[in-house]
Length: 261
Image (tube, rainbow, N blue to C red; front, side, top):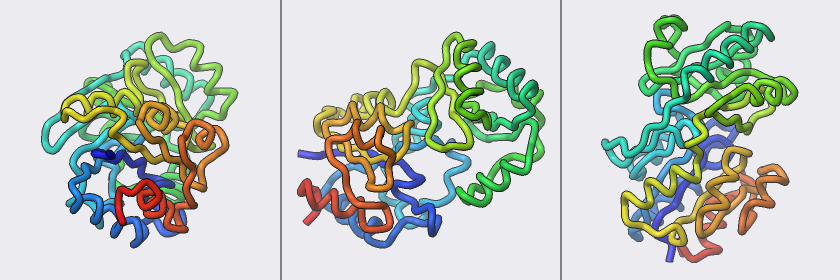
């Protein structure tokens, strides 16, 4: 019996085409919630940059954010895993040397270091992200715990820098950038923490995703569902592959497994 659902946002709950949650998905989640199923978000976004879940916000019980670095249930933060400050320095030095931008993510805000036009093109255009702090400096930001770095490294640059990190890991769900978080955090571990906190067994959890940063949670959940728009590696990690996000993928999977009628 499925007691908890964990959903990635971009490409899983929110369409890249419309930047919104499809109506069939909203209706499916509302029905699941009426049946007593808990609903959790599992995203690479930090909480301040989650700006696209209004139609389902009242249905959400908790959040795995910044790829598992911060986990909340209701108003309670149940887990925090910041990045080693030395690894933050490594990434910033590499970003400066390679002349690429990087998002720096704290608990309450996110800023851009070494801003370039690609940030606005991808975050503002492709992902329709709002809420980036434009006033706080890098120096001020580094006085706070940092939970995620999002450098615009290509895959070769990412591999080069990853070898220099002591206690952090890099994951990628978008071709334009990677997400770096503590080695003690990923979406799968976030689900373990929240499920344990709520007394839910992992085999009672179903997780949905479409990107490389979803692989850990798809493998760890009792049922892992890859969206039809996911890459081959993500699909291989899942127990089931549903339809594309824009073709009622979430709703069809929930019906397939009897979570909703």
